[in-house]
Length: 132
View 1 (spheres, rainbow, N blue to C red):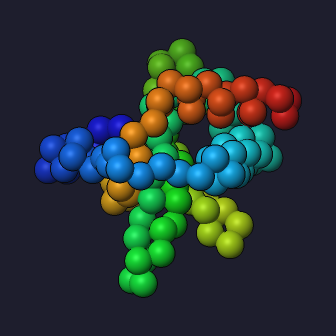
View 2 (cartoon, helix red, strand yellow; view 1 turned 60 degrees about the vertical axis):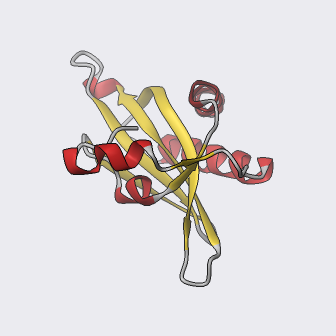
């Protein structure tokens, strides 16, 4: 995802790591949590997802807090193709944030793990559709 604030654009492109991976159980938890939250709290009603990435934030004690970031296209805004941002953060459960047309700060600050964004987008869409 590219930050909307041009001062952060270059920074966001350098915020990736190839050296780490995210446990599959965490990926599945965040995908399921995001899909469930979108299903439960409508509107908005997403019809598509894109640029889904996963990363983490480091707490003061160096513990990782995982975050799933991406964009969704709400049915209500499909005609204008207005994609909006979201972040799903793994806490003791999860928290989901919608950022409208601006990137959610969790996503700006996260250290992203190189993953196949298209595959994560498809997994999220599939999970969401299975709840319909």
